[in-house]
Length: 310
Ligand SMILES: NC(=O)C1=CN([C@@H]2O[C@H](COP(=O)(O)OP(=O)(O)OC[C@H]3O[C@@H](n4cnc5c(N)ncnc54)[C@H](O)[C@@H]3O)[C@@H](O)[C@H]2O)C=CC1
Ligand SMILES: CC(=O)C(=O)O
Image (tube, rainbow, N blue to C red; front, side, top):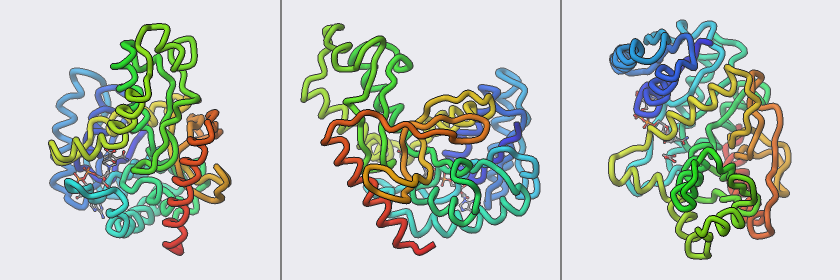
């Protein structure tokens, strides 16, 4: 499948690199308002390809996106140290509006894969203005937070993160919800599995992991200015689920008719992802405090999206 990436900065180029070296796409086309940057990223990544795959990587204009099955939206500003994701909304909403109409003029029926922040609200805007069906406008949502959660759990329990189907749901941001009660590890529920391995999840362990997942981006941005490898791999993982029609369960953000007592809100849940985009939503079992936290997260996102009057 041909994949377009609009926004060839740190996130877009990391996604392109991950896609190219894994060989998840036949062709990748970078588009950026900074044309020289798009050309340079495409050249650099194409020099990695002979070691790893056969993906064709190039830069172009919007017309070159014709025939793309998926277009990744990674254009826009990122957070500066100390800045929250929601503070980017005004600037990135303007960017997304112009980009979506340019894309639809050449690719009438794409799957849009949104990474720009605040990703849930930007995905909400992209879905509304594109008029595409809800299952075809997918925000990367909490796929990265879920990876961070699994990575920290794996470090604590000392098993592979791929053997820990635990999810972060709700906003990709400060109000996100770590779904501890529905989490599984290996062959049992997470808490009893960890205890069996002699690595109990005490209240202190739980608090530390919650804090580190929620604050991971702030810490990385403080240290190196931006986060990109994690989300780059996350975008590649979503693309793989679509191009291979996997039906994989991934935590991604789409418009949701009703969740946690809130209607018409765009947020992340574990969802089935395949060739047609998202085909099912799966609400994990939640204890009352998690359910309340999900309601708060959903209400916040809904108020923000409604205030835009799209
Ligand atoms: N969803 C997630 O988990 C994550 C999302 N992000 C978000 O991804 C976005 C991109 O971040 P970075 O790549 O680090 O930023 P960056 O500044 O490195 O790249 C952004 C690129 O967008 C381009 N751009 C801006 N306006 C454009 C337009 N109208 N048309 C075409 N290209 C345009 C810029 O020229 C630049 O190359 C940010 O909003 C950031 O917050 C970052 C990390 C994780
Ligand atoms: C920047 C961002 O959204 C993240 O790394 O989670």
